[in-house]
Amino acid sequence: MASRLNPYLNFNGDARQAMEFYKEVFGGTLDLNSYGEFGQPDAPNADKIMHGMLETTSGFTLMGADNPPGMESEQGGSYSVSLSGDDDAELRGYWEKLSEGGSVSVPLEKQMWGDVFGMCTDRFGVPWMVNISTDS
Image (cartoon, rainbow, N blue to C red):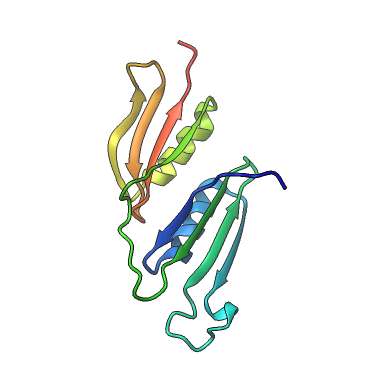
Protein backbone atom coordinates (compact mmCIF):
# COMPACT_ATOMS: atom_id res chain seq x y z
CA MET A 1 0.00 0.00 0.00
CA ALA A 2 1.24 3.49 -0.83
CA SER A 3 1.70 5.97 2.01
CA ARG A 4 -1.21 8.33 2.60
CA LEU A 5 -2.08 11.26 4.78
CA ASN A 6 -5.61 11.60 6.15
CA PRO A 7 -7.41 13.34 9.02
CA TYR A 8 -7.94 11.48 12.29
CA LEU A 9 -10.59 13.21 14.38
CA ASN A 10 -11.03 12.82 18.13
CA PHE A 11 -14.43 13.08 19.83
CA ASN A 12 -15.70 13.29 23.40
CA GLY A 13 -18.24 10.47 23.20
CA ASP A 14 -20.07 11.06 19.93
CA ALA A 15 -17.67 9.52 17.40
CA ARG A 16 -20.27 6.97 16.27
CA GLN A 17 -22.80 9.70 15.45
CA ALA A 18 -20.15 11.88 13.81
CA MET A 19 -18.71 9.12 11.63
CA GLU A 20 -22.22 8.01 10.59
CA PHE A 21 -22.94 11.65 9.69
CA TYR A 22 -19.80 11.82 7.53
CA LYS A 23 -20.91 8.62 5.79
CA GLU A 24 -24.20 10.37 4.95
CA VAL A 25 -22.25 13.37 3.64
CA PHE A 26 -19.58 11.57 1.59
CA GLY A 27 -20.94 8.05 1.06
CA GLY A 28 -18.54 5.13 1.10
CA THR A 29 -17.76 2.32 3.51
CA LEU A 30 -17.69 2.91 7.25
CA ASP A 31 -16.01 0.52 9.68
CA LEU A 32 -16.48 1.17 13.40
CA ASN A 33 -14.79 -0.75 16.22
CA SER A 34 -15.77 -0.17 19.83
CA TYR A 35 -13.62 -0.43 22.95
CA GLY A 36 -15.77 -3.42 23.91
CA GLU A 37 -14.73 -5.28 20.76
CA PHE A 38 -11.08 -4.83 21.72
CA GLY A 39 -11.07 -6.52 25.11
CA GLN A 40 -13.07 -4.16 27.33
CA PRO A 41 -16.63 -5.57 27.00
CA ASP A 42 -17.67 -4.61 30.56
CA ALA A 43 -16.00 -1.19 30.70
CA PRO A 44 -18.24 1.89 30.99
CA ASN A 45 -17.02 3.04 27.57
CA ALA A 46 -17.46 -0.36 25.87
CA ASP A 47 -19.88 1.06 23.28
CA LYS A 48 -17.67 4.05 22.44
CA ILE A 49 -15.56 4.02 19.27
CA MET A 50 -11.93 3.01 19.62
CA HIS A 51 -11.32 3.33 15.87
CA GLY A 52 -13.51 4.34 12.95
CA MET A 53 -12.60 4.63 9.29
CA LEU A 54 -14.63 5.96 6.38
CA GLU A 55 -13.36 5.27 2.87
CA THR A 56 -15.27 6.94 0.06
CA THR A 57 -15.59 6.28 -3.65
CA SER A 58 -14.06 9.76 -4.21
CA GLY A 59 -10.85 8.51 -2.60
CA PHE A 60 -11.29 10.26 0.76
CA THR A 61 -10.29 8.54 3.98
CA LEU A 62 -11.51 9.97 7.26
CA MET A 63 -10.71 8.35 10.60
CA GLY A 64 -12.05 9.09 14.05
CA ALA A 65 -12.46 7.81 17.59
CA ASP A 66 -13.78 8.66 21.03
CA ASN A 67 -11.15 9.74 23.51
CA PRO A 68 -10.59 7.26 26.31
CA PRO A 69 -12.08 8.28 29.69
CA GLY A 70 -10.06 11.05 31.34
CA MET A 71 -8.59 12.23 28.06
CA GLU A 72 -10.80 15.07 26.89
CA SER A 73 -10.11 17.08 23.74
CA GLU A 74 -11.10 20.53 22.62
CA GLN A 75 -12.86 20.37 19.26
CA GLY A 76 -11.70 22.64 16.45
CA GLY A 77 -8.55 23.83 18.19
CA SER A 78 -5.75 24.13 15.67
CA TYR A 79 -6.93 22.41 12.51
CA SER A 80 -9.47 22.49 9.69
CA VAL A 81 -10.37 19.75 7.25
CA SER A 82 -10.13 21.08 3.70
CA LEU A 83 -12.10 19.93 0.66
CA SER A 84 -11.12 21.32 -2.71
CA GLY A 85 -11.52 20.65 -6.40
CA ASP A 86 -13.41 21.83 -9.45
CA ASP A 87 -16.60 19.74 -9.25
CA ASP A 88 -18.98 22.53 -8.26
CA ALA A 89 -22.05 20.34 -7.69
CA GLU A 90 -20.19 17.73 -5.63
CA LEU A 91 -18.45 20.26 -3.38
CA ARG A 92 -21.60 22.38 -2.90
CA GLY A 93 -23.41 19.19 -1.91
CA TYR A 94 -20.78 18.44 0.73
CA TRP A 95 -20.97 22.06 1.95
CA GLU A 96 -24.75 21.96 2.36
CA LYS A 97 -24.61 18.76 4.41
CA LEU A 98 -21.61 19.76 6.53
CA SER A 99 -22.93 23.22 7.38
CA GLU A 100 -26.49 22.05 8.19
CA GLY A 101 -26.91 22.20 11.95
CA GLY A 102 -23.47 23.76 12.35
CA SER A 103 -22.19 27.30 11.98
CA VAL A 104 -20.88 29.18 8.95
CA SER A 105 -17.96 31.56 9.54
CA VAL A 106 -17.33 32.37 5.85
CA PRO A 107 -20.26 31.89 3.45
CA LEU A 108 -19.58 29.75 0.39
CA GLU A 109 -19.16 32.43 -2.26
CA LYS A 110 -16.72 33.81 -4.83
CA GLN A 111 -13.56 35.18 -3.22
CA MET A 112 -10.96 37.74 -4.32
CA TRP A 113 -8.67 35.00 -5.68
CA GLY A 114 -11.45 33.89 -8.03
CA ASP A 115 -12.51 30.61 -6.44
CA VAL A 116 -15.67 29.90 -4.49
CA PHE A 117 -14.69 29.35 -0.85
CA GLY A 118 -16.40 28.94 2.50
CA MET A 119 -15.67 27.90 6.09
CA CYS A 120 -18.03 26.18 8.49
CA THR A 121 -17.97 24.15 11.67
CA ASP A 122 -20.20 21.09 11.57
CA ARG A 123 -22.57 20.03 14.34
CA PHE A 124 -19.81 17.90 15.90
CA GLY A 125 -17.41 20.84 16.26
CA VAL A 126 -15.16 19.95 13.31
CA PRO A 127 -14.06 22.94 11.20
CA TRP A 128 -14.23 22.56 7.40
CA MET A 129 -12.95 24.65 4.50
CA VAL A 130 -14.40 24.15 1.00
CA ASN A 131 -12.70 25.63 -2.07
CA ILE A 132 -14.21 25.26 -5.54
CA SER A 133 -11.75 26.13 -8.31
CA THR A 134 -13.13 28.25 -11.14
CA ASP A 135 -11.78 29.11 -14.59
CA SER A 136 -12.35 32.86 -14.28
